[in-house]
Image 1 (tube, one colour):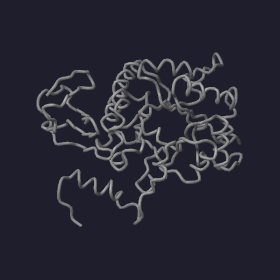
Image 2: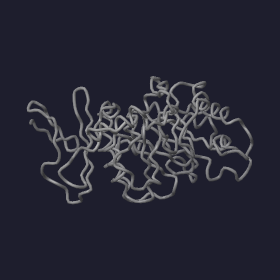
Image 3: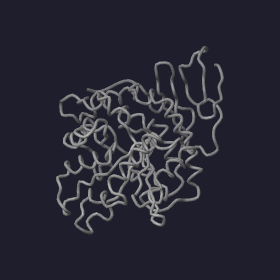
Image 4: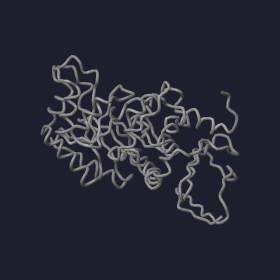
Length: 351
């Protein structure tokens, strides 16, 4: 049926009400989204994925783990990570008969030491610990994949699993985690299409999409689906990714798989911390369905999202104007008695 009206309301009908007509006549299964133990991820905004041999995790010279040093160093820069994921398998997986789970066992100190690190991160720095899963691991020492995943989650007390090469999960994978402990998150490398979103509660915007669309439609479909935009330290200064993540109300995954720690890292981390403060302190408005994307603006290359809440309305701005802009930008329903706060600079004024 043809639609007439505001274009955002049309998007809401197609994406939020009908899930792009991708569910083949059935209703969206809300089971995972209604589970209290899995809801912590939707208020999570800072993640690092690190190779197990990265010096931010282990120093081969001193033969000591540096994981706590990394957590301690990043805390004052941007408030630290809610999640750190460790990757010990690719690209070595397949060079011998060790499977992906054997790669964890082969790390210094074994699984017991990894468990200590996971517990330390949670208790002292409020940082969860993720492991990775490689579904393509078929030619090494065979262990049933779900059995191996369950054993590793239990041994390390992992809080989540990064699903390599996958854009979805499965009931069997979630069950493999649930049988061990509640609250374990499946986190897909690719972004789930609408019909797959009911089976997983988090995923990433891959940086293969180098210049991503300003409006993230997965966030529009399910604002309570946890999204992380991938950014790689070695590549270039990545403030654009941090800013775009805040604009869309989701998190950032800083990926350290490729080597390189440029000298601008700490400066960018401090910028990231400014965006994270806005996200963390206002998570309630970033997870509800009433947000209004891409308001009409008075200036090209300047974009505005509106996030209505119970007691406040938040506006996020993304500007491609390097010289800045001063003047009227967009219309708001703000009344005379409302208090306007610039969250970035703490400037306040009464309208």
